[in-house]
Amino acid sequence: MLYLLDTNILSEARCKRPNLQVLNAMERYRHHCAIAATTWHELQYGCQRLPDSRRKRKLVEYLDSVYQTMPILPYDFAAAQWHAEERSRLVAQGRTPPFADGQIAAIAVTQNLTLVTRNVRDFRIFDGLTLENWFDDP
Image (cartoon, rainbow, N blue to C red; front, side, top):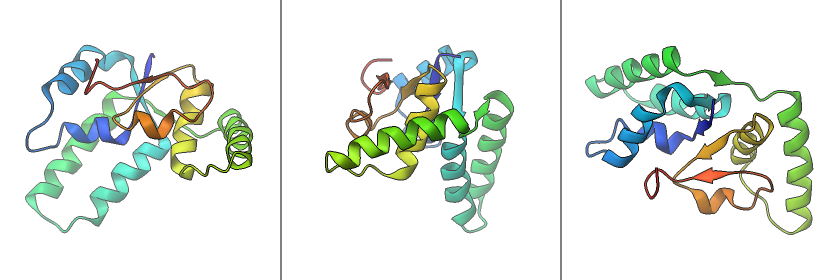
């Protein structure tokens, strides 16, 4: 695996007008991608909050296909250890990133994966994290 896909990358496929650059990159690298358990939670939580509708049924189908084609990586001991150290460093600098972002970054770093996200700015604060934005440069 090479890439850990953030929620906003996976969600792009379900947009009314998806970014073709992102869709092409997802197709090109589909066998080299994984998602974090935290990202899976975000996707499932968003889906489960929707009222029963055609839109929700299509989203459930999409998430089923994601689940069957991409590994979901856990927030394990190594990730928790890295996250605690990095969170401590950042808080000492007066920064408090969202906990979920820290979990996702930790999984990417400890698994030696590049995090693909549209929110590069939010993740730049994490040391040792490699980032790509397929909206700009797939």
